[in-house]
Length: 259
Image (cartoon, rainbow, N blue to C red; front, side, top):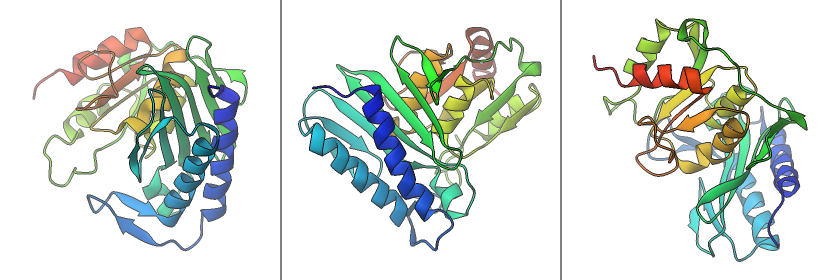
């Protein structure tokens, strides 16, 4: 038996209870590959719950998880981010989420992103639209960068790698109404789906960051590609651009500028 969108929503909400309970508490915080790439015990608690929930009902499925990596199984694959926005969470900033996606035959079929602080559950099933707490979502129809509010993020190796997205940020900052940085790629994509942001781009992500949110944005009417305009934004080297088709083309033009 394959999972349903309702299954993912239930699991995400239950993981959200773990995050909400841990929010504002004292945390044991460690760094992973870079000083700004944090992990807390709540990340691990949420991931342990998600892994157990999936294994109990779908033990044959493969899982790709942020903290524990790949768990090999059959051709069905889950992407799970137990706490997207850990830096926010660790600092007491209430912008973070649980992100769960389910893929078959290399294609993401189901996606859920849950924000436990606002009780907002974004969801999508391929070919059936995107929803927020059961209400349909649609991207904005903003068709000019000068009227667009954009959102982005920065890679964890910003301190060492000159390809750090700061040049793109500067270009968009003087061509749009503004550029925001929330700190949760999953929510960035969902906010595009909801029309709260007009467009989103980012470089050097991980598939669990955007698998669910990418589907949700796409089902809400966004064109979601990598920075080269290709459909595959889950394979390395990862990058992503999401906006309505008209604005998406304008964003790609800016991203391809040199100097």
